[in-house]
Structure formats: C-alpha cells, structure tokens
Length: 310
Image (tube, rainbow, N blue to C red; front, side):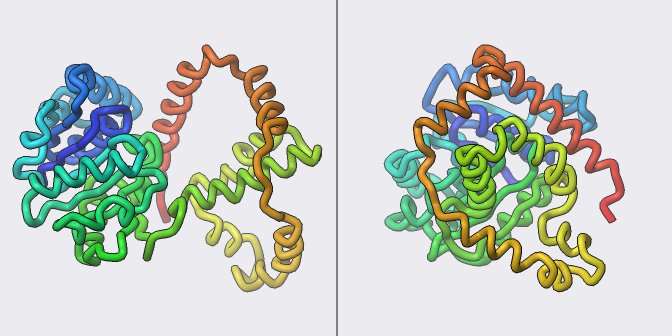
C-alpha cells in the first residue's frame, strides 16, 4: 500500500488520515502546531470509534490507528510518501509556501493533492518543478463520512497523475469525480451555489420561509438525491426518459431561469435568515447539532453501503 502524508492536522486532515488508514495505508500526519500534533491521533481515534459503531469499518479502531503517526517534521512526514494530501490555510500565500517546501522534499513520483475548497492549483503550483504532479483533491466535509472528492487538474497536470489519484481515492473507499479543467468553485460548490441563490431569492421576495426551504430539500428533493443524481432523477420522472422530461418541462425551467438575475446577498436578508436559524438552533447548541449531523450521515452512508446499488 502507498504511504500517505497528510499536511495539516486539523479536522479535515485528521478525517483524511482515517480515510487512508482504514483502507490499509500507512499515514503520516504533519502540522507546525505542536498542540495539533499532540492531539491528532486522539482526534483520529475518536472518529474511528464512531465509524466502527456505525458499521462503516469492521476493523478494530486501535488496529487502524496503529497505521497513523503524527509529527512536527515536514521532512519526516513526506519521506518515502507516494501521495500527499495538503490541508493548510485557505490562502494562496499559504499554499505557495507549503508547495515550495514540498517541491524540495518529495520524491519524483509523489502525487500532491490540495484539499482547497476554491483555489485552483494553477494559483500556487506554477513555479515549482513538480507541478505536473499537483492537482486539487477537494473533499466534502467530513471526508471520513462523505465519500465524494473532486479531482481538478491545473493546466499542466499530467493526465496520468489524475488517473493514478483517482485509483488511490477509489481504493480508499472514496468516490472521485474528475473535473476536466479548472473552473471557479469546482462542481459541488457551483451546484450548491445555484440552489442557494434561488433559495435566498425566494425568501427575500417573500414566497417562503427559510425553514420551509429546508423542508423542501430534506423531505423532498434530498430524499431522491441521496441515492440518485439529478440526471437520473429526471430520466425516471417521465415515461420516455430524459428527452421526454426535457420536452415536457424544459420551457418551464427556461422561463424560471430567465427570471433569476444574480443578486448579492444583502445584510437585511442575511439578518432575517440568521434570526430564523438562531430561533431554531441557539448558537451554543451548534456543536451538538454538528455531532448529530455527522452521526446521521454515518447512518445514511452505512445504509447505502448495505442496500443494493442496482
């Protein structure tokens, strides 16, 4: 199995560590923060225990954890590493700094993936010698539970690198999708952004409350979307398949799209939604609700794995 180096031992880095370790990889976690290094294995262990309880892993958590080490030395972390998953601060300068260091330390075949949520790899890899092995590997939080990962190459990324990375992620139990070329926001953020734009517009214009928007998704669209995507959904929603659906409803969606001019999210609208959310969930209850969310996600993923896929 490949050795994996995780750069940045925050929540995302520790989640990635559990993903690769439970797949059998040796994992080295690095962070410049000594406190993060000291607590990293405990954080990974806590996640593995929850995954084991939910049925996402069958191996004993301590056995999985034995594959994970944590260090304050970048050189030690990447020594003999086949794959690097970087999770440093979400700024171009921070990315440039760590990739300049990695460029001097990694081997000639090491793949370098960034967990960035929106910065294209071309913004921080252009000037380094190993740039053809660099790309974005953007997870959906938390990657230890939500398997999707977006692979986004820079213009100079070797296609063979993306294929190698796709295979590594897939063997680790993730669901990689390949983005053909760089685009702002990648794919998932753009899809989510389109839904949010319409949701905010409907609330601002007084058609519906934010709470009922949530119900429309979680108790309506989201039920289907949890096991099939929008293309398959519409293919099944008309007797003649996707072409029949588009003939029936295409004009309606076109008219709706023409009404949807981009809008900034105003402070007044944000304040309204904020007050609505605080009434439903006081700020001090968010950590418990986050834990509830993660548990529900684990239960859903476990169900999807056990249910027939075809």
